Every structure is written in C-alpha cells, then in structure tokens.
Length: 185
Image (cartoon, rainbow, N blue to C red; front, side):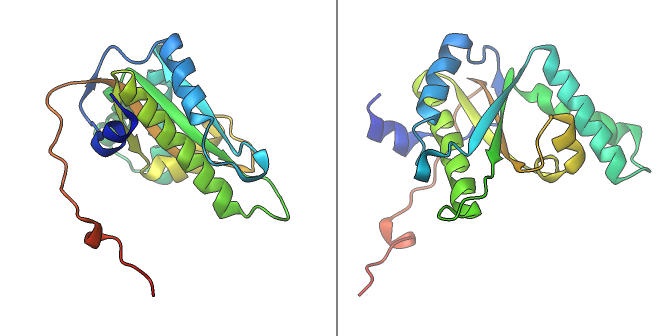
C-alpha cells in the first residue's frame, strides 16, 4: 500500500483479535514512531508494551484506580475496568516525557508524543494490523500513572490497542476540504 492510500484509509478499529504485532513488527512500528516531529531532538515520548499476562495486570491497575476514585464502586463495575485491556492482544501505552526547555514549550512536546502515537498506528496498519487510540479516565489518573511507573514529568498520551481486525472496517465519512480548510487572505 502506498503512503497516501495508507494515510487516507487508516481507520480505528475497536474489535480486535489475535494476533497482535510480534517483536519484529514492533521494531518496525517503533522505527516509524521515532520519526515524529521532534523540535530539539528531545524525544519527548516513550512507549510501554503491554501483552500476555501483563494485560490482566493492567486491568487490575485500572480496577484499583477506579476503586480509589470511587470507594463505593460495585464489583461489576470494577470487573468492567479489569476487562478493558483484554479487548486487544497488545496495548502500547504512549507516554509524553515533558522536559523543561527554554525554547520548546510543553504543548509542543505533548504534540510530538501524539505524532509518535499516530506514526505507530500508521505503521501497524501498513504491517497488516490495526488499532484504536483510547484515553478515558485511566489516561489521566495518578493512580494509573504510579501503577505504570511514570515519573512526575510524564503523562499518558493514550493507550493504543492493537491487533488484527475482527470484522469489517467501519465506513469512513467523506470530508471535503471546505469542511476544515479555507484560504486566509
């Protein structure tokens, strides 16, 4: 698939099954992600790979965080949080690593991490896998951050759930340039 076709056809997929990207595919995915725009070459991002038994462990972290937020959380709701990571064979946790820099503001570093995430999704698609970028309350929870070992200058940009598409792709909306662009005069 050529690059423009890939860019114009990538589509988030919530229904994922095995197989997920293997180590060789992950090497390609991370190579692509590393080409994100990166002013000052700060590399203000990193990834955690969650697969196998670690998916259930991440589910426990999610459930424990939910209980921390709501001590009256029902067992059924805690179980829903516990099951979230099991929706894919592999999750990449995208982490923005914010550094103090006189010329590179925080937002630029956060956007660089977002570009690295997008590069990872595009590379996965090019390799025959698919995925979806999720955030939700767990991406902004300090209990989850601690559970994942994040430093005080780090924040979760998203959870990239990856695997093989289970079913047909959802239809993509057709946008025209005038939906989001106009000439400035």
